[in-house]
Every structure is written in C-alpha cells, then in structure tokens.
Image (cartoon, rainbow, N blue to C red; front, side):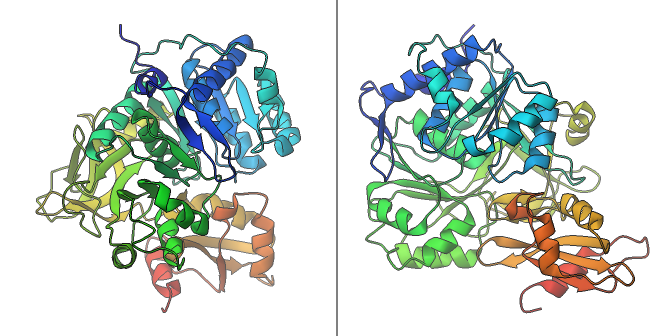
Length: 504
C-alpha cells in the first residue's frame, strides 16, 4: 500500500536542490531544505527513543520558531499525532487538554516548564520537554546526539495526523481529528486552485497553532517547494518591509486592517505580490475596497474551519466577489438546507453542510457528539448559516450566534460566562461579540450584580486574567440591573448586541 504519511506527501515535492533556502527570518537566520530534513529526523529519532509508538499524541505549546516547524514535521515522520495549543492558554485550559488528549509527550516553553510539568505528572504523561523561541530548552539538546536520517513511518490516509481543539457552545473544547488523507487532499486542492507556481515565496506572519497558519500556509509552501520568509509574530511594519521579496501572503482580517494603517503599504511595495489571502473571520467589504485602492490588489477570501480545513474560496483566476467566500473547492460538496433538511434554492438562507475528503474523522473521544454533527448521508453540519448566490458563490450570513470571532480566534461565551458567574458579587452574565474595526468582533460582557454588591469592571477583568487566554478576556464590561429575556426565560442576546454595538 502506498505510504500516505503527510510528511511523505510533502517531502516528495521538495526541490531537487536541498541546499537551497527553505526558510529565513528577518533576523538573518537561514535554513535549507536539507536542514529541515535532518533536524526533523533527529527529533523523530528522539521520539522513537522515548518509546512513543505510532498514534501517540504530542502536545505542543511553544512560541513560533523554525524549530517549532521542524518539530511538527518530526511528529508526522514518526507517525505520531500533533496537538498544537494556543500559546495564550493558561493552566486551567492546558489541564483540560492534557487530561482529554492523554499525550505521551508534552513540549512547552522553558519558562512554563514548572507548572506544565506538574499538570503532565498529574495526568500520567511520561515525558515533558521544552523549546524556546531562541533555540533554547531541553528538546533540541536531547535530539542533538541522534542520527540525522530517519525512515518515515508509513501511515494510511485514515490514520490521524493532528487533533485541533475547537471550543464548543457548552464551553467544553472538542478535539477535531484530522487524518493524513484529510490534510494531504486539502494541500493538493489548494495548490491547484490558488495557482501556486515556481518562484512563489510565502511571507508567513500567522501563528502556527491553528489550521490557517499551520496547515494552509505551511503545507502550501512545502508542497510547492517555496521558500518562506518567517516572522515570529505579525508586525505590520515588518510585513510591509518584506512584501517586495514575497509573492504570497496569508492573514486574518485584523492583519489587513492594521496593514492599511501603515503608510508604506502601496502599489510599489506590492509590485511583486501575486496573492493576498484572508480567512479565519469575515472580511469587511470596507477593508476589501480600501486594500484594493491602496495596493491595486483584490484580497482572496476563503472559508474553512478546524474540522474541515478549507471548504470554499474565491478564485485565483476569476472574479473575487467582496462579501463572499467563493464557490466550493473542487471535491467539496456543499449544500444549504432549511429546518427540515431540504436543500434551499439559490439565494435562500439556510444551514451550511459539507462533505468531502477534507472533512475530519470526528471529535476525539466524543462519539455521540460526532454522530450528532453528521447527517445520515455523511454531511457535516458546520453550524454556519449562508446562501448560494446565482454565480454559485457562498455568502456567510450568520453562524451559531454564540460564537465570537475576535482577531481570527474563536471565543465561545459560555466558557467566559461560567467564570464570570463564579466571581464574588456576580449574579449572572451574558457575553456577546460587537463589531470592532481591529478585531472584527470585540468580546463584551454584560453583568448583573448580586443585591448589595458593588462591582468594578476593571477588577472583574483582572480576576479573569490568568484564568483564560487574553483574547477571551472581555474588552468591555457593562453593568446592568437585569438581562433582557424572552417569554421562555432565554437571554435575548440580539438585543444586547444591538444595544452595545458601536454608535448604538
């Protein structure tokens, strides 16, 4: 049987000249393709020496670095399952992920080793290593004595390559299980659909703990044998400085808003650029239009999710329609259905359901939830609401209204509401998203105090910090006497969104 290991699929596309540049940083570091092959081999050999068997999970919460990419490739080569975790997650969140995934190896930043190791010990994790952004930590030192060749472990298309945790409306995170076949099929499809070509250079400014930066961007460059300009974090001024050397850039809407604030962003800076791609959150038409006026280029907006990787995309060659996410990608079946499950006519609004080789295998250790999210004929219920226009382009007109997308990150209010309601003096709370120029949506809390209690919004925010990731902490907290409810007692969040929207 042909080896379907995602690493094998990507490595088969590496350039013939392995001494050419694969990745470079603005700080002057440069890594060849051979460097990537050898370093990932040493790390894979280390994992084998630790007794990790194919299918074991490797949980990773480290800062973005070239070595973090090598670690990802090594995990694939060893036949293990990569579990990336947002670097903003705090101890309570990490405790849940480690307890749920039961990884055999946890890798964290050196400064977090003490508390991460304690959590790992409590959950029976045998091995903890550290990796710092400055190539420090125990992992690289432990890998150094190992051989720089490694026979990639064969995997089938259905074997797991990664688990991506995505929040649920109840506040309990779900692990989306993505297979080698899921990710390889999406890489091949996007390579053709986005017209990757020889000479393309990817300017990589995204985090690498979620689908966009890790799978869509990195797989695209590796599969095309394209070098990457690697930014440790998004810096709009640095992006503008590097644009003349790149041809492809991927970002979230917040990044494009901040790029527009840079005076150096103009047609000259973008003269070599071929493609700007946006995803992870809705792109405002205003941003689309402003960017085109400044640069002469139309942003390509696409649609995907943790459970499916990419589903639809505006075309590379063809009309890019602002306010839409384009037609379904080749091989993806997408339908809009009404409350009865019947397909809607063009222009009618309904629930978005999808099926294809890119759709995940289900939720980790949640068989009942997995069955609930799939239809009898195998379509995944995305939870998003949209319509197909006459040209076959998808418009996302709504989504599970609990979901907030802020700066490209998903936030589910229930988790924050639960924590708020536990704080002294809080009777109840409701968390909503309101429009925000920089972040797309700003997390906003509306809080009712207990009788006789005096609450301070600043103090409430401070109490939340350290318990949840910073992007989940409400940017604004409003104190009210009561929450609006309907006849069934359900909080009417639409009224709150209307009341607290900018210029309301």
